[in-house]
Image 1: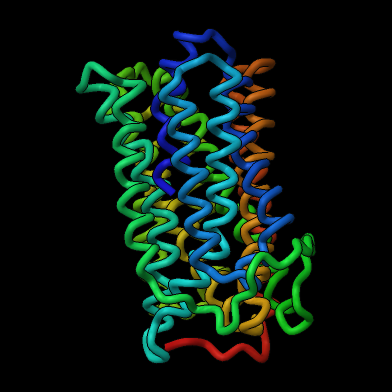
Image 2 (image 1 turned 180 degrees about the vertical axis):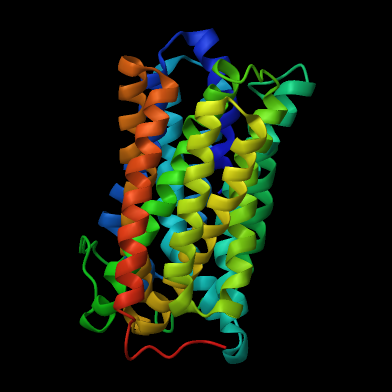
Length: 378
């Protein structure tokens, strides 16, 4: 997952080298999210049929191919190709790897395994811009070394995955594809709606920081240190992981409305940083908003995973991630378009206000319609 956000701290360098607008930055970022959504819709349920391990290894291959595209440095077409391949890898991993980690755990350790899966997801997304920012700022190979490091990590992950046991009881050999779109089992529908809306709002914040925060730090706050920009993006994902670790104490059902409330406070702080041009407020907003996103995200994933039948768990989790990645992509493209017309600060303010309203609606709905019939993990 770190490979999917490696370019975040490097977009400014690519803008200087290739020459494109802030709108194009968000479009390049959105191409990744569109690839994730497409893969989830087409093959989100494939690991339920063929097994978790082959799908994860395929994702590793796409991730390595993505790094190769960036290493070739052939201009905007290869940049788009690299993001498409990266999105394909993330789409395969989101459902298959999450389900595999939960299924590999002993019966009494499912909750810890769920945290490990979501922490790896968010932690990896956060480590990408931190790694690339540090390397780009302090080494003479800013656009090459980050992707060589990524290739090394992919090789290590592939070797570990090769020796893992398969968790699908009777995997089929090359079964035909059966795209099912956003099919959700009837027993999951009661928890899916509030969980998906909360995920959409939370991932919108992550998309803002991943695609736009480095540009805002440079243009508005005068922060041109790529390591600092990468650390700002990292902070929101770090906070998300911390928020996820607190979910069991609050309870999965309560984590949804509480997480949305904390997310709203974080968005307010981000808006305040745009008005006052304050880096500390931006970081504080990232920490607060990320914590709220993490609370709501893990609570939602726990409820959905518990409610889904084993034979449909991978496809159900994939459907959940489809909605989440719509949140990480569609609003960000709107920010890029508004930034071209109104300016980055004004676009950011409009964005934060809209997502605050969405989070408020999701939190209120989750509080008033507590899911019934779901056994909560301790």
